Length: 526
Image 1: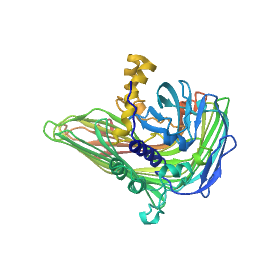
Image 2: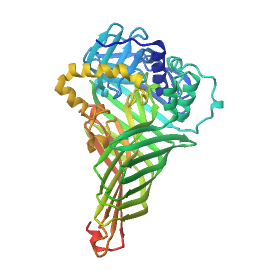
Image 3: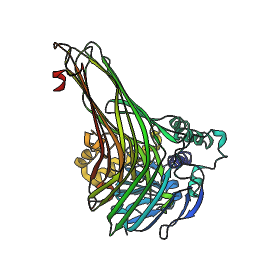
C-alpha cells in the first residue's frame, strides 16, 4: 500500500509549480470563448487567430485546466506517472486505455492505474493527435514575439498562479524571461525556496556524462540561446559551447483530422532569422583520453502556449536543442579547439498528406570556420553535431512540471511508478521500460533517439563539425575540418499517427572544408 497523505502546504506548492510551468512565457490578456464543442475561455494576443472545431474520441477524458492543475499533486521524475487527489479537483474516473486531456497542459494515454481512497495514480505515455481527436479542423496563425524581459516594477500585483489559470488571464505567445518570471512569481506567491532557487537557474543536468546547461532568455525582438557542455575526468578537460539567437517570427498551422486519421498537416514559418556561434576546447594531460559517444536531446527552454486559440487543445510551440559529441582523442597531451558560425534566414512552408511531404520556401544560410587547431602525437578526431535551434509543435508541454531539484514533489509519483509499470509490463517489461528512451532517468540513449524529434512538426538547423588530425608522428602533420549545415523540416508518426508516418525533408544544405596546411594530399583523404 502506498502512503498518500499530502500536506496542504506541499500540495499547494505542487499546484503553484504546475501553474508557473504553464505561465513561464506569459502575462495578462483578453478572453474569448473557444470553438463550439471545445468549451472554455481563451485569452488572445494581438495579431493572432485560431480555431479548433474538434470532436474528441469517446475514450478521451477532458478535464478543465483549473481542476486538473489543482488536483495534480505529484509527477514522477521521468514524467510518465501522474498522481491526482480527487478532493482537490474534479477528476473523472480513469481506466487503462483512456486518454486524459487537461486543457492547455497535457494529453496522455493511460496504460496502468491505481486508486487508493481519494488518490489516483496513472502510468501514461504521450497521446498522438489521432488518439485524441476523432474529427477536427485546427487552424492557427500566430506572431511569435519574444519581447524584452520586464523589470519587477513593471508587473502589477499578481494573483495566485492557479487563479490566473482558472480565470484565463494568461497572455499567449509573448514569451517573457522564464528565469525572471519564475523568480518573481516564486517570491511573491510564497513558493518554497527549492522552487525559488530553481526559478533563477537555467536547465542544468548531467547528461551522457557531460555537465549540460541550456538557457533561453528573451530580449528585444529575439530570444538569446546558450548551450554549454563541460567534462572533467582528471586528465581531460573539455568545454563545448553554442551561443546565438532566434529572432521574432510568424507561425501558422492547418491540420485536418478525419476518423482519427490526420489527413493533412501544414505548418509555415515566416521571417526566420538567427545566428549561432559554436566553440570547443578539449585538452588532455598525461594519461588523458576522451572517447565514447554522447547524444542527448535537451528539454524545451521556451514553451509557447497555443491552446488559448484552440478551446484548450494542448498544442505548444517549443524551442529545444539536441547535441551529439563523438570524440576520438586517445592520447596524452592532445588538444582540439575551434569555432564556427552559422547564420540563416528566410521562410518555409511544410505540408504532409498521407505520408507524402512537400516543402516550399527560401531558407538560406551560411557556415564559416572561425578557428581550428589540433595537436597530438597520435591521430585524433572529433565530431560535433548540433540541432540548434529546433522549433517543435508538440501536443502538451514536453515536461509537465519543472521538478528538477524538487524531490518532494516527485516522490509520491515515483513510488507508484514501479507498481504501475510492473502491472502493465511485468518485471521483465519494467526493466525494458526503464532502459528505453521513454524513461529520461535511467535510459541508455542511442543516437537516433536522442537526436530525433517526436513532435507533431519541427523545423531545425543541424550543423556538424568533423575535425581529423594525422598526429605529429608523420612527416608532414595536417588537420582537416569539415563543416556541414542543413535546414530540415519533419513530422512524427508518434504524434500524428501512422497515416502521416515519420517524414523529414531537407530544404537547404551547405558544406565547407578546410585543410591545414592547404592542399596536403594526406589530409584530403582523411
